[in-house]
Length: 167
Image (cartoon, rainbow, N blue to C red; front, side, top):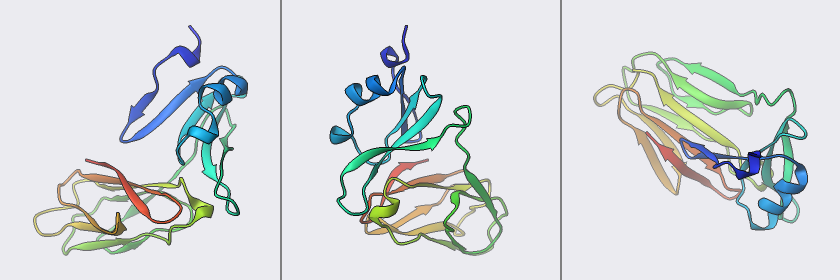
């Protein structure tokens, strides 16, 4: 069985499609019909690729995410009992200290240059009672983590931040 014949893997709103070759990726999931942020693993090159829009035209094209044996590295930053501002290299913010007050996560401005970027905000037994974690600027409003082990996954669509998964 080839990779292309397998079902995609989906977890927390993220979908990864598998392909044997670049040609199969381009015929099976052409950029012109894809969605920004879509991830593809190509066995031939042992690499992950993501669909990202051009900063000048907005047209989607495949860009290399990782070719280090298929390992995609992402920065996980542990946050204490404080408000947080998402940094340029953050992929996951993990609140791991019990909150003593409601906290806010500030997302960077959405941009065509960063469209497809996904950020996970996770509570590891930090949120409690009225001490929640609010993520401002998601779908034009606020998305709030209100459970001890809750999380939100948001994605830059080039214009704004969209909620793509909520646990």
